[in-house]
Image (cartoon, rainbow, N blue to C red; front, top):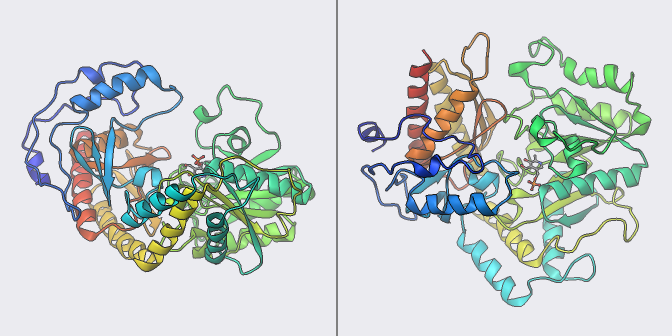
Length: 489
Ligand SMILES: Cc1ncc(COP(=O)(O)O)c(C=O)c1O
């Protein structure tokens, strides 16, 4: 069916810009193209279904209103106007059904509207929707806290602070680290993404647009190069480099201008997410943790994108066998309901009453959904599925890399896989325009997938993904890569 797609009329390339500029009505004036042969989706869908080239008429109507009503500070990937979702499929308002390889921005680990999560939400909503844990008490938040303590690395006593989002979870980690250590400074990585509140934006260093015109930020954050071996910032090669990037932190940063005695914590992403799905070498974090411990600097492990089974382990840092001091989670925690959690050694959360709180964090409905997410991941053996399907996906992508010079690098763990596109395998010039073309073609053919970094496609389907859906998605992806590669020559 996907091959058949090539035979039907379709919009010219670049027909719409993936970044829908505010007020840009050209998109809305696009003609509607004929649909092509489709397979009806069921719960056990193995193919996407495109009935009208997206955005269809209903979607266009909503896009117009959206541009009038909603803040222009956000960037949309492409005009997917979602109406419903089931499992690994997201359906738009015109009836198109897409295989969801981005899991709603890496949130829907157990898939769209998992029946057990829906039931848990309904049941809790009928009982108690809200009662502010920072002022009173309720059971679901205690239960959920206990479960998070169980599944996070480290057997030491832990405490949990609940909030509403990833940025808030990191914000709490920053405050807890400062409060506990009484030290002002932080370390973070270039390419990092930790959120967009003022404090977390000060850690974030992945795109200028995220900081432009917002200065001054929270001072005293130093960024060091992420171990991005495909594009080593030091121009070295692993393993001959002997990981100079770790020693650099000690020799050139801590010993020269960023006194460890004043450094509260270092924020890490075990697999850099927004920065391009970058995976550090095998023994990297062990070496880093040793240095941090030597100087009494806390390691804050941001698992907001990589956690809750995405990498085939509950938390990606487990691949390195390192036990962080603080872990932050959000996104997949409650399969779509807003919640953030900051889990730390008990001794770190020694802050006094009133020093940090919020109204809505750890909402009982979200906690009840989160409890189900943990049970589902266990009972449906989703860590195993993430590893199994991730291995298969990686193998297929590596095979593609042999066929298409535009695929410069394939890397990842479990179902967190990045495919970096380059214009030239030698110079590694990022194929930034080409990747947008690939992404837009995928979208029009029924695959919802997004990019990361300068030119990396991120593969992050729900952990319940099947081989059949991976194959269907990859057929679409390969078709798009083939066409874009041919145009590049
Ligand atoms: C690693 C990481 N940390 C923090 C955040 C911020 O989370 P939120 O958007 O919920 O504030 C994100 C979001 O993409 C993320 O990927």
